[in-house]
Length: 99
Image (tube, rainbow, N blue to C red):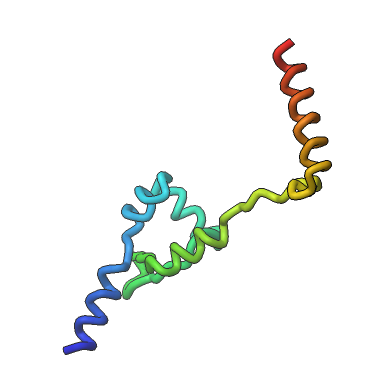
């Protein structure tokens, strides 16, 4: 019985192409293009090859892999002299844009 419950949960976590496109805010055609170009999240072709599903865990991992983290400034903000210098530079730039 537990195996059936586990399998049911796993199947329920499979997304259709339309569900994933809606989730990502893109067209289904984009997902099709990504698959043909071997890009995008991993997918599961079901029997017959005409039906594609995406595992939620794979989509979440793929999104995590796409994450772009801002790089730290070369200025050390924990050093008060550098922070003061940095702030003055930013202030001067913003004052020039107002003028």
